[in-house]
Amino acid sequence: MGPHVPAHAAFIPGHPIAGTEDSGPDAGFAELFDGRWAILTPLSPADEADVAKLRGFWEGMGANVDTMSVEHHDLVFAIVSHVPHLIAYNIVGTAADLEDVTQSEVIKYSASGFRDFTRIAASDPTMWRDIFLNNRDAVLEILGRFVEDLTALQRAIRWAEGDKLFELFTRTRAIRRGIIEQGQDTRRRISAAGRARDERLRAARIARAVIGVDQPAMRAQRKRA
Image (cartoon, rainbow, N blue to C red):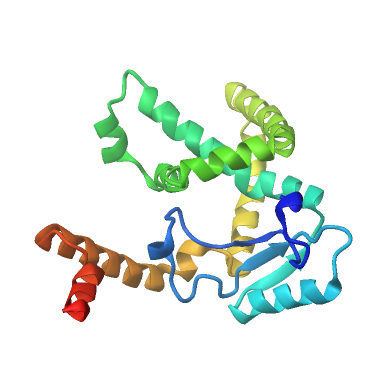
């Protein structure tokens, strides 16, 4: 991207860690960035004043800001975001491909664990295809580690090694509690805002279905009249 940036512009890669599986402007809400993280990955050489200005921009929207190298960013988010999405896409695809379980049964009997996977797997496919292709080295490294750990877990189940299973589940449960304590559980934080947003979207969809036109278009027509 660097060669396409005008000489007068300061290019500082970064992105927020916020949102839901929904995409587009209608999926936004006022509290979207409150208490969430925005990650900046300044390229060398980077003007500190420009970095500070961008930091202030994100902080002004309520976000916490951290900086890291591009390489470290790719590794960190391969484990906390990219590979989890890959696993979600795969497990939902596996369920859909099972010959002995119908799709209606998958939908009807899905418990909270599977519903969480389907929520993640509902994310924008174009964006995630590009993420996996552009961060493939880090994703493949973490995916290799995951496959090794999954094989060890499979072995523990096969040989009825309950102590190993209990130790893993206890350790991971503590990590989950840490995420909640730091206020990074999206569903808990935006439940009220999300419900209000969903109600607005639902009302708009109903209006379009009933009258067949968008309300903004009607308002524009009235103004022109």
